[in-house]
Image (cartoon, rainbow, N blue to C red; front, side, top):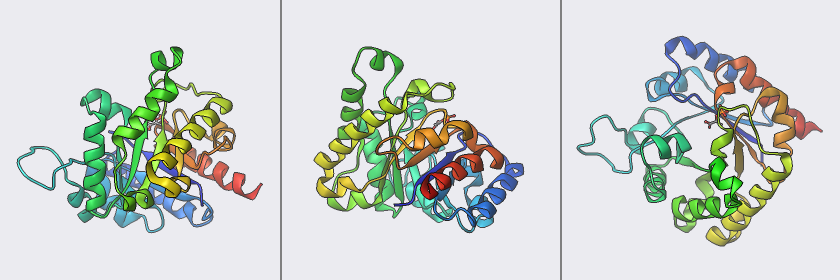
Length: 250
Ligand code: PEP
């Protein structure tokens, strides 16, 4: 399966940033061995979809309900209508800032699938949890509670392992630690989805940059990257995409 490199723009970007999306889309044409996607803020979703012909475009969150009295929220069907093909759910910033539980994340993921979107489900331990030796257990619990259920789900789910302490900090786990965690996630996915769990992509996220992407992407069971800060300019994001492309050529 092609490596999947997804840029999460978080709460960054006005229409001026569409030029970055255009540049990323144009370059994607010569980097077709990599599947590239961007998750801009809601306000740029439709415009990004219109500007970008080749890359995937998705959102950073959705509400679990189909519609109703939820001021300020956006449903999965609305995302689809705006041109989204996928949605990220359970990002640690959502879990922390909006007190989202595993059950909330699962409800959002199931709503997204029902609306015809693919989902990227984020999991990851805090620094204290890693220091106390609980990282794998915490992530296994998050997977058990957050992943959408049902046989059809596996085909449309990607998991992103993002240690909270590595997001936006410039710190990353060692390649060995990433491999250990991703192997443990793979086992859990097989327990949850059966044989389909063997095929799901598991992304690594947390301070991926052009200069460390080659090494991190080569870790065991890493099928791509979820990229925050380094996805905000075409130059740095394409450096990561190029590293993924080279890893395949090698
Ligand atoms: C993220 O927030 O998903 C992320 C991986 O951020 P960064 O690349 O900036 O660490």
